[in-house]
Length: 188
Image (cartoon, rainbow, N blue to C red; front, side):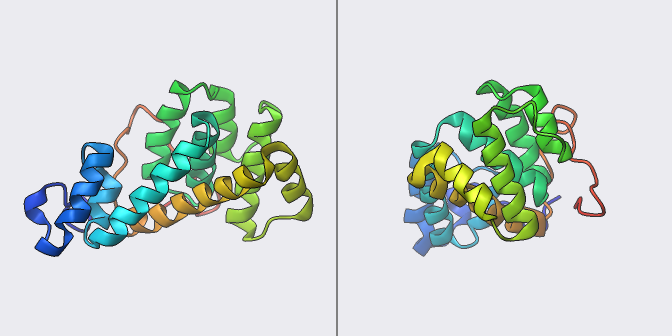
């Protein structure tokens, strides 16, 4: 059970947050689990949804899912991992790549583009810096705009992870998505 009551219905939102609630509904058609916690701050919920919509619109689904997976694996964020490991398959991310990201393993199964995104995410999340070599490799592969947008996507999921982990949101795809391993006490 989450630590706060999910806000998924318009009737749960204070008057001053109704316009923001309506914006999310018009964008997504519903309030999903992460948004149901962020709706405790309707303006932030609306703006974070707008940010996510913009990031999704600029990246391929494949690249977006790789960025979400590496963020959720390295942080770790079980809720995001559970959702995106299933979605990643539907947009063509191979089981081998998903497993390499999940376990923090060897990236030889990855395309160059996948490898660059994963390495960038691993360094940023675990080391809190990006080496010059990884930056250059990512810039060459992605270009400057997608380099920034990929870093922003990784950061977006870290932000979501703070809320999801802090509110103890349970993953939705238990038994469908592979669980994240405990890598030295970092599993939540």
